[in-house]
Each structure stands twice: as structure tokens, then as C-alpha cells.
Length: 294
Image 1 (cartoon, one colour):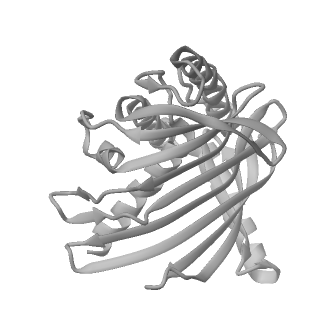
Image 2 (image 1 turned 45 degrees about the horizontal axis):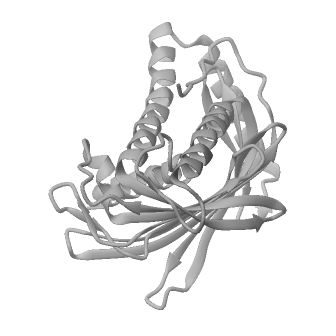
């Protein structure tokens, strides 16, 4: 049961990230709101596709600091923080590595900090001297994860109708606001895309260069997975906020709130937050190959 729970959480997390990065990857099935024509909506999304793809492809080029906070949610909906961690994330020989530098709002010091530094140096040494087969397997696993995100991004356009509902200023950025609602005739080609059938979303697109500024998504009807082993319920929500880093926009904060059950017996509600900061270019090694979206 614990394995089923962890697999479901992993799926929801990946789907949430993709929803946050990929609404409207291909301009299909649009409707207009207010006095804006359907052609204008298509053009907004077309330009945002180009900007979003560039931003998504650029992410592996940047090292960053990541603050993670996990909470349990009680029956009243109140989140109770359980643990926080801070990582420094960078690319090493073709795939990312996260070094723990803080725990429960305190920086690591003394022996724990020294141990993490030893682990980092050992991992660098291991990757630099691993066999060709081992390196290919490690890098391919990372590429496969991003390829799955790409597949789910492509399904966004098939799964949703889009509507321009207005304009709004978000932290100084003037944005178009679009709503995404599930298409009733959508048939997911793989099980991992089934969660899209019960979700809706809203996204804010920066008006000058059409970067994603903020995306919200939520489950509005129960979705079952794995021969009805697990069920995702309304109350499951995701939100991504992005900010400019040089000439691209990268994640600033990602939040997921999960309401789900396994085998109809065990229910759980959790909330996780990730805050990203201190972006800077990696010293990319010769073994690094970036996934790109066409």
C-alpha cells in the first residue's frame, strides 16, 4: 500500500509540474472571452508556446537553491509543517545532483555539513569514472523523465479548451489570463494522462514576451488509477510561479496540495512547497546533453 501511495504521489507531482509548465503547448480548441477574437487567443498561445519551450529547455543549464517544505493536512484543511530541507542543485556529468545544505530552517554545520561535502565529492568522482554503459543509463533515466513531461505537455492541448478571460498585473508583470477546462471528448492515450480528464486550470501569460508567470490547476472530479487502486479527489491543487532569470523565466515557487485515497481505505492529504532561488549557470560537463522541445 505504501508503494501504491508513493507511486501515486510521484505521478501527481509530475502531472502538476507539467500542468504548470505546459498548458496550451499546441494551439487547439480555443474559445474567446469578452471582446477578443479566437484568432487573438490562438496568437497569444502560439507565442507563449515558443517562449515556454525556450524556458523549459533552458532549465538544465542553471544550478539553483531549493527550499522544500512538507506538511500534513488535517480534516479542517489546516496544514501542519513536518519537515523542511534546503538543497543546492547542479548538473554533474549529464544529470542533476542535490546536496543537502539545510534542515528544519537551520543550515547544516559541523559533521553533517562535512558528510554532505564528502558525498558530493564521491559522487563527482563516481560519475567521472563510471563506465560508458552506466553513464548512458543514468543520463537516459534523466532524459526519460523529461521526455515523459514532454509527452504530457503534448496531451495538454488535446485535453483542454482554452478561453481568454481578461488581463491582470502579477508582481509587476502585465499578463493575459486564460482559463483551461477539460474537453468532454478527450480520450487519454496512456494512464498517466487520465488525471487530465478531471482537472481545470488558469494561467497568466506575460504580455511583452509571452512567458508563463503563474499557473494554477485543480482536480474538479475524482480520477481513478491502477485498476481502481488509487483515487485522486477534488481538493488536489497545484500552483507554479515563475520569475525572470536573465532572458528566460524559471520556477520561483511550486505548491501541491493532494487529496487522495488508496484501495478506498487509506485517505491522505498532504501539502508540499518548493521555493527556488540563486539561479546561476552550471559549469556543464562534456557528458551533459540537454533535452529540447521542438
